[in-house]
Image (tube, rainbow over all chains, first blue to last red; front, side, top):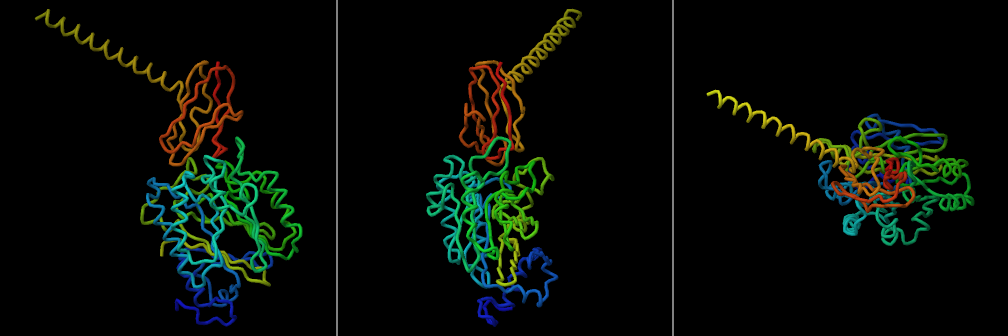
Length: 319
Length: 115
């Protein structure tokens, strides 16, 4: 297979063979396609050319998450190296992504030098633009002031915003501020009011992509993996035919479909965390060094207009 | 010969008493130390409820690989971010019940009761 786009029949910048190749390196990944609200998933080994052909889209973007720059414990003593591997993975995609979403925990301790190192290392990503939302590790000491100055200059409130790209409405939410004792992630009244207004004028046929750090759906409340007022936010999106929710925080992939809403969490670029309930706590999971890069990775998202299809491909750094 | 034997017995007894004394002293010191310590480990505070006398300084130590904070629900005290092995201390002067949590992982909660 070629590294170049040589079969661009639809003039959309995507070559079916190149696309197949990009999925081939995913190895153990799964590909999920939402068509008319129905999820179809394929193990990558089962993908045939007909399926791959139906996945050609006109917008592709990448999600990365949980880089934890500054972390240096045994679970991954070199988080810069694995972030660089993620960048290399993105730059090896057959079509450069329109943009890259980072869904938070850029830093481990909100230190200026950690934010500096993240920015430096992401400069070489071949993409149009980077978009960010903060994780709880990015707002540790100053309630997010430093994060906003660096990564959220154009954002509203605590760092939320929306934008449109090729007919898709993207919404970046912040659910890591003003957390309450005993509670989960928190969006807060001001942000919810903004969200309700933000989507009010949109046609129900507009595809929506929401991204935030902590899962907006309840993954495992015992470990704080959920958002207290997430259901309220999702109630504003009920009338839309295609809603995709992309989160990080739990350092592993997980997917759920509820009606027209697909929920997806991404791998970390730094260290894995245990599956819900399989360890005494959600702390960093120590795995043998040779296995680490199988559990870290990037998420490639491909949107197909007309079919309301969104193909989500998780790709580990290894292979 | 007999004198020597008695001396040996006496020495042994002294030794035993000494060891026992040391032991109890250590145990005493240990419980004193634990009485005002809260360990942060596996995303939880241990003990979850700590009862101390007014005037006691309580120290929290983070033994996790991830940062935590110690923040009073009623904003009475608030630590900076504690990385691995970092500590935070607060002296409780007034009797009362002080619920607190980790503002990074709010599912982590604890209480200090001051008598």
